Amino acid sequence: MTKRITLPPLGEHDDDWLTILAWLYGRSRASQAAALISVGVAEQKAEVATMLEYMAHKRGVTVDELVKSILGGTIDDDRDDSIDED
Picture 1 (cartoon, rainbow, N blue to C red):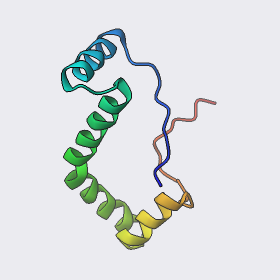
Picture 2 (cartoon, rainbow, N blue to C red):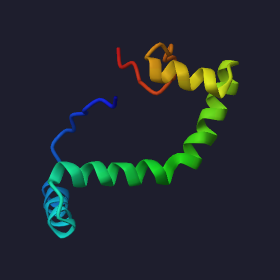
Picture 3 (cartoon, helix red, strand yellow):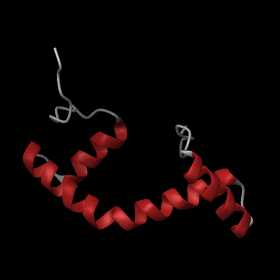
């Protein structure tokens, strides 16, 4: 079963457009937001697959092992994407 996610508030402009899109498609704002996220995920699948291949190779594991680790929440996240300002 998928888990419900909580999103931070949208900016005023995006919030207005979400409301308009939901009305045009006859959906709730939550359903319209979910649909937009699904489209965005689908559009990025090829790029994400390439990124997963790179990261799996870098870590010395298979893509399947990396995906299982990410989805299971057991990945050792040692990426250098944060800056220590101490």
